Structures are given as C-alpha cells and as structure tokens.
View 1: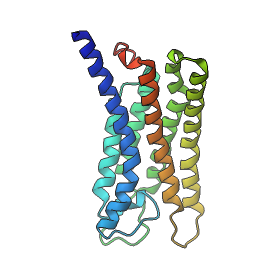
View 2: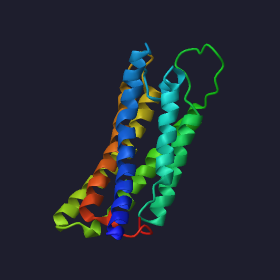
View 3: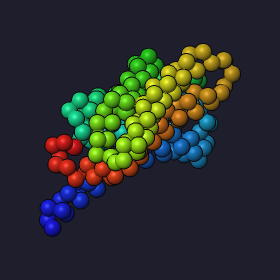
View 4: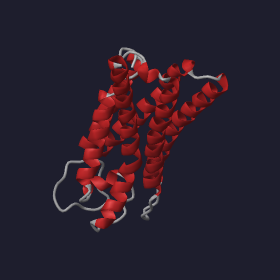
Length: 219
C-alpha cells in the first residue's frame, strides 16, 4: 500500500506540473488584457508591450514561473529534459530583455527588442521540437494503434502551429501598418494557447498510458 501511495504521489505531482504549465499558458494573456483594463491600461498591440505598463509584474512573473516549471519538469528522455531546460531559460530571458515601447516612456528603461524576439522564437522552437520529436516517444503503450496515431498527429499539429504562429506574429510586427491594431497580440495569444493545449493533451495521454507510474528515472 505504501508503494502505491508513493506512485500516486509521483503521478499526481507530474499531473500538477503539466496542468500548471497549461494554466499559465491559457491565463497569462487574458490576465494581462483583462487585468490591464481593470487598472485603466489600454489594450496593447502585443503581449510583450504589457511590460511597459502597470502589468509589468504580471508579465515578468508569469514568464519566470513558466521558466521555473519547465526547468524543474523532468522530461521522459535526457534530450527532452535538456530541451525543456533550454526553453525554461529562454522564457526567463524573454522577460529580462523587454521589447521596445510603442510610445515614449516617462523614464529611461532598458529595452532589447532583438534579443527579446530571438529568445521568444527559441522558446517556441524548443517546445515545438519536444512536441514533434519527443512527445511521441511515450505513445508505444497507447492502445489501440489508431488512438496512438491520433495522439501522434495531434503532437505534430501542435508542434507546427508552435512554429508557425510565432513566425506569423514576427512578420506582422515587422510589416504591419502604422495604424494601431491588435493582430500581433492575437497571433501571440494563439501561439501561447497552443503551448497550453500541448500540456493538456500530454496530461491526458500520460494518464491513459499510466506512464506516470513508471519509475522516476524514466520520467
């Protein structure tokens, strides 16, 4: 019974990790938007632009939390673990190198839009790599095979979306008109929601395979 309690504890801990990452991804953009409105912050053109508003602490705190979660999460393979660690570091660096402000700032603030963009793209590329090449490595215990294939297709779709949507946001940012719009924000929101969706799908899959019960070395 004690052994089962330990396995349940490990399984529930990993489930909480994954659902925590999903919740961060799903709530982060909305808290910035709706919380900003509560504090009379105008709806920004991009998620990154909230750094230069009174929602800065939420922006930085959410990225730091995501980074810590990813770094602490143990991947199924060593390679997955290294890539998730790298993604976690990139998430923190995105917050430490803020994008430029769209309006003149009242006080001098350090900005580094190019590094901000590079680390953001590297973050999504790392998670996309995990989706496409590492997530399917746990599917061999899924039955029937048709269901296994369905999960595999879902991971590939999420991975390619995680590449395409940040690139779309970058192109919109580079080539948008001078008029204020929110296309970049919603492209970024979609990319972050795909990140959250991946962790939900992974949680469902892992619960079905009972891989959370396998010894912690494999986890």
